[in-house]
Structures are given as structure tokens and as C-alpha cells.
Image (cartoon, rainbow, N blue to C red; front, side, top):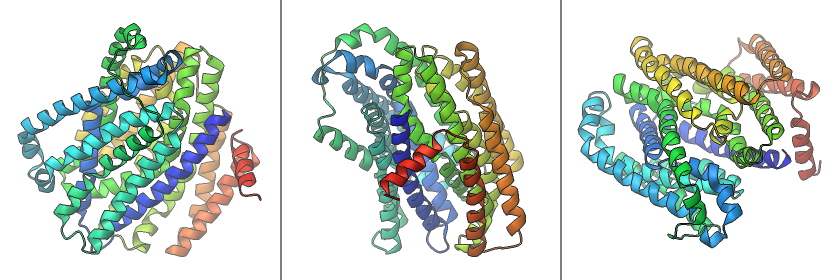
Length: 497
């Protein structure tokens, strides 16, 4: 656990630094006078399409790497390890098929989005370099995670990528990038930029080798690899679609301007999820090894610790964001239309808490011998989310997809919790989980009633300080997580306090 905790701490710092840059970018996108809501909405739609392209093109190669890396690493010398060769080659072939399909079926995009989201039709082909870059990075990232380089990959994806966007926004504001058309073309090469950076690093440090000779491990596990990829491919596509379907529906039914408002809420709510990314990155190889060694106590420990720690972080971060959102929009000069994102943020934030509070259940299932269940649970998610999102969006506007997200993700995680309990007697929650929710509610109530008539920057600062004192102080006083004090002690030693 100490290694997972150390990597998680460092990765969390990196990710939050990246999110700070992301919030700066969001501010620049949404402030008066630089971009319209429609232009900001287009960037979100392009990213959503890139995520879908990556999910379809990578052919489940990241899951193949997660599951079989230790088999290759334990039985082959580095120069005879053919895992990354086939992973990148198959992903590139997959992307070629996506490219062909994208050209052939462009008329469907025009028909669906041409009325309310004309900008997407105009810049449609610039989604492909963005999708290719994310596809390659996702495969290289999975390989780097197993090499213990999760901090590096998190830096590239969360910090460097956002810095690229900051640079082109600043250049656009300074009129160096003279029009929005060239801005989007530069935006399309941000993911290829981090993919190339990671590839160069792995090559320069001799962490990556290529061979087209089929290894004994590939021959031995070929049928299992194919079976895994076929099942996980469908599940990955389902999960990726569930992440972006709401944005597509809003853009199609309500237009890119409404999508821009929804995307603002989604971006802010994603701040809640930052620790989850670091814990997944740090724990995935340990979970795979735990299943390989049939170490159920270790798996239970990681499951419960991840659930509790993520619940503590998500509740605290969400409530800080939620109680200050409206004041933030007005105080920092965002367009008044973005106040409509408040209710969406509330529902999406609750969705993040549900997902994070259940710990690494998805990673436990994917790395186990019952990885096929991830597809079945994904089908449950998709069968709920797709129709609910569409129907609620038509009836309730931009808040509808957020309601659909909360309902479907709650049921989705409930199904996975039950499965892990029935099959392995693994369960994420403990009594401190309940105490965390009570403490979070109490902290929010105190701050709300103390400052509900106060507005502006002073209100944001005082509200936040009081909540941190109450909530963080309560977590420490009641020792809700055994990982909190070691973290503080580590930070204290590093800072020589």
C-alpha cells in the first residue's frame, strides 16, 4: 500500500496542477470577449469525438497490456517482448478503419448536427488527428503504467496537454493566431503532441523495444488474449460512449451554445475525479499481480482503502466547488449564461461521488478472471443511460442528461459491488464511509448558513476556509482513513516542518 500511496500522492499533485491549468483555460474560454459559447462548445465536442475514436481504434489494447504485462515481463527479456509492438500496430490498423468509416459516413454527421451545430460540420475532419493522438497515447500510457511511470503519464495528459491549449489560447488572444479556424487546427494536434512526447521518452530511456517476431507468451496466450480483447473492446466502447453521449445529445438537440454551458459544468465536476485517476494509475499493476498470486486480502485492502480515500476526497472537493460556483461565475467575469450550469454541476458532482466512492471496482473486475462481466455491467449502463439521456434532454434541457448520468451510474456501480461481493466477498464500504458522509453534510450545512447572505471573493475565501477547517479537521480528529496521517507525515518530512 505504501508504494500505491506514494505514487497516488505525487500523481494527485500533478493532476491537480493540471486541473488548475484546465480551470484557467476554462476561464479564458468562458470569459467575456474572447470565445462564444458555441466556439467553446465545439472544443468539447471535438474532445468527445476523440474519446470515441480512441475507444474504437485501440481495439482493447490497453486492457490487454494491463492483464498480460506481468506474463510477458516475467517470461521474456525486454528485446523479445513483443507486447507493445502488436499493441501499437493493431491500434493503428484500428484507426485506419475509423478514418475510412468517418469519411464514408460524414453525411450522417451533417444530417444530425448540421441544423444546431454547424461549426462541428465545418471542422469535422480535424477530429481525426485529435483522435489518432489520443489512441496512441492511451496505448503508450497503459504500457508506461506497468513500468511504474504513472506520474509521468499523468503529467503529460493532465499538465502538458493543457499547457498546449493555454499556449494556443494566449496566442489567439494576442492575435498571433489570427482566426478561430487556425486555432482549431492547432487544437487538433494537442493530443498527438503528448503522444509523441511519451514515445520519445520511452525510446530514449530504452523502456520500449520493437520486434515483429511472435513470442512464446503471445503464442501461449493467443486465444485468451483474443477473447479478452473482444469482450473488453465492447465494454470499453460502452463506457466511453456513456462518458460523452450526453454532450452529443445536447449539441444535436439544443446546439453548441447549450453544449458549452453543459461542458463547463462537466469540466468543473471533473476536478472532483482527479484523485481517482492517480489511484487507478498507481494500483492497476498491483491488482493484476494480486489476482495472479490469488492474494485476496491484498485485493480487499486496496478495494476498501481506495473507496474510503476517494470518498473523502470527492466529498470535500465537490462541496467546495458547489458552494462557490455561482459566486465564482459572477466574481471572475464569466458570461452570465454560464450560471445555468449550476444545477448540472450539482448532479454531475453527485455522480462523481457515487463512482469514486465505490473504489477501484472496475479495475478489480477487468484484471480478474471474470473480466467478461465488465461487458455485461457496461450493457446495463448503456441500456439505461442512452434512452434516459435522450428523453430527459428533450424534456428538461441541459439538466436532463445530468439526471440520467446520476441514475445510470448509481445502478451501474451497485451491480458491480454486488458482483464482487457474491463472487469474491470483496466489499468497498466500512463504517468510516458513513462517518465521512455525515461529516461532509455537517461541514456544508455550517458553511451554507454562516455565509449564505454573503457574496463575492471574500465569501468564497471565508466559506472555503471554514469548510476546510471543519471537514479536514474532522477527518484528522476521527482518523477516518489510515492513509491520511502517513500522507501528512510524509509531506511534513519533505518540507522539513
